[in-house]
Length: 148
Length: 407
Image 1: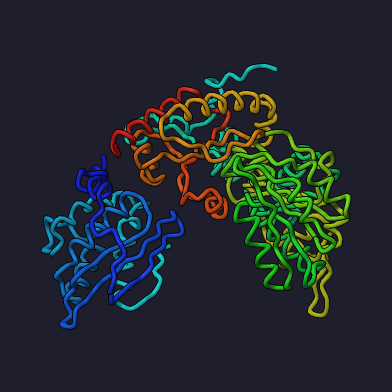
Image 2 (image 1 turned 120 degrees about the vertical axis):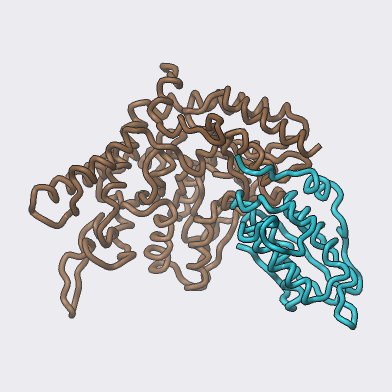
């Protein structure tokens, strides 16, 4: 049997998503869209002059996995530098495709390891990674990110 | 009408015995593809084990046998659709290729800038995109006849959209995402009264009721083998002979030629003109078996039973708090598209899958339909004659479990 996908943390973030709002004064914004399932969101990041992420937020609609993932991502970004955010992006990406095992490989993922079983649900990996790709796109100054 | 012995017929389908996560599979994704009876599987493997050879080529024994089996299938399809002649039956890769063939061979040859093609609001992408490609190529316009909130064609609006510039009506017979059965005979009559030919996307229709292309008087009719218990990779384009004769080949290659020289090539006669290259011989043989299997049971018998299933499924789904059906046409097939309040269709799909229930979640290749109903996606249970009320109960139980998780 696969690991339980809908763990309490995920369900809780789906019910009460953090930073679920438009972020005024955002320095980086991107739109993420997964045409396959209709998930559609905007990720906002506010980076201060010394390169620290002051605030992050998201808006949009999607399944519980994509919503919880965006919620936890925005929470984890605050206080990180852009370089640290990109490291986190790489680690999360490896996590959801099953290449990073949190027990075996050192990482900075913290609570985000709740998504460690999602590689066993290949059809749902993109749900978890959409907000991350969108955030990465925002930092790279891309306007629209599509995970098709 | 004899009642179906569903429990007995289920034994014909080895896939129905599958277990997923240790639970019996409940397969409710028949609009995506149907399971294949052992009879079809045997026909295909017999060809490869005992007969595999090319068609229309050699004079040797096996090639003649393969050619005969291949052409037998065309005869079966001709009878199945009640076409006038086997020359009107073209084997393609599926409904999608059939429609692309008409767009590129018929449309590109005979339509011109400013001409209009009329489709409906409930088309599958395969009856939208080929026309959009054609429109880009030659500058014609795609018009869309709207539907109402039940997912029924607004017939008067459809009629209003028929103009002197309309060159073709291309319409789905049975909607794959809503289950709506369009009044296709009336649509064809209306279009013909203005000399407009009609292409019918029959992908979902062929498993629902008998199709008689002469009685319908449609000019083109497309369907896929895998939606009617046959193999993937094989489909049919029926076209009236006078249209097919006038159309240039869609693809060039072997089999579609009469003679080839570097100076000039003459094309083969119908239907071979449209069958370039070595065809999907095993799949054509499998399609023959599938149609014969369906004919032995009787499409009317299947339809009567599926009507019961649809009635049962509609009632029980509507009794679940928070469930909303998408597609409630008066005339519909056993397709139940729905959304559950507070649960995204993809989450629902994953949770019911854990209970062994296979439903489709997503836009079902009909994004404009999703947009019309203002939903990102739906969950869809599509029922075949081998499904049972007990299976619908298992789906409903699984939906309640999802509601419990997401409460």
